[in-house]
Length: 477
Ligand code: ADP
Ligand code: ASP
Ligand code: MG
Image (cartoon, rainbow, N blue to C red; front, side):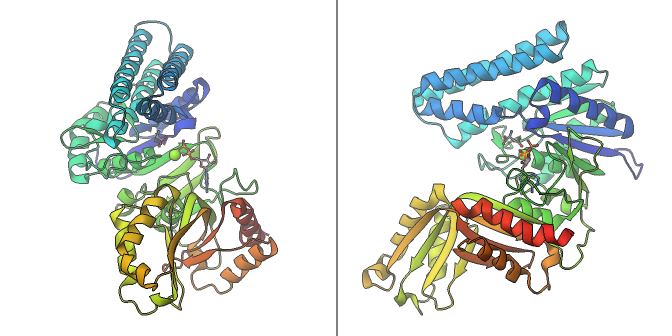
């Protein structure tokens, strides 16, 4: 790439709501056109239109369950939505006809996949990954055609030819060296010809070319991986809110935009459920220190949130509150556990064998119970696996039972400013006490960046609002 040290390469990513309708696609394209004037090179990453990835996955699962009416209707909707958008955006002519035929072709592929799934009666993770990125593949073509119509030279690029991943289908990890080489061979030459590539978010492929995905919400991650490989100066992710906020604005109407965040804060925030950025997004750009901005497509002049390596939060300031939903808390308990060596290690070994992700752990100091939080979807199999592991202890009565409480959520309060600041937890628990909310378990990140609490799902939104009012709104006045 050019050797000019500044404002050379910008990677822009547009989320589903930013490219999910005729008006929003137009708005997003205007933003790119402006970016192209101000930056030497712009690479664009697009998501599928809002709801399309869900619709694709619904089609595949419905086909697998033998629900042919549902999957056929869902496919018809997907086709209609794309054709309507094309008709509303692209002038009649050759390029519109070509686009329509490409989209129809993709939907034809989708029908064929779903038909095979229907016949086989099951859908594998690999099958899901072939189907899930079709929304991005169609939308990248629409977006590139729109840019081209506006006079911005542009081309759609499938990430399956760029982002090389392992074969962990539905949650693949990028292989950066191989990806870097592909980016250099495919993307850089386009950009050097002043063609703005529109890359499909979310998708990748194994070295042998089998399509994979980076996990739901993975288009943010795609943008960061490309930024790393292109040695970009900045990444801007465009979404439908003004930036990263102090809480999910759908839960807390008083939530405010956070002007600046450190890489570690945003990592913690995304990990603990703030949907605004995929949790792995900052990984590829941390080492290079590439700043990332979160901006609002529908309020493009607003500055948004800046996320950078340098930022240091002043002591005492808390940044945000997040929640993770659909969880279960598993308890392994019994008085005889006291002194049974290795019980924790064996328990977590049994959990790991089920590939369940443990989101939080706590052990009572009397060693009478171990409890940990996992997604409800894996609770039943995890309990069985732990029971198998401790069969002997259960028989002897050293362990009384292994059981799960469903319908719980983790509420996490995040902020590097809480480090060495006394009284933070007292204020949090005071606020919860006043609101009459029962706390089931507590854990503090050893980095002292966060405190997590487990509460019943029915209390979670109330808990977030109570903590927000106490530790964020009060601090502002
Ligand atoms: P995109 O399609 O642009 O990737 P997402 O729906 O994945 O958008 O993420 C943006 C949404 O995340 C916002 O509309 C907002 O409702 C939700 N959200 C949850 N927590 C936060 C937060 N802390 N800050 C900002 N948005 C949040
Ligand atoms: N379209 C994908 C999803 O809905 C990826 C993304 O939007 O980031 O999960
Ligand atoms: Mg997202």
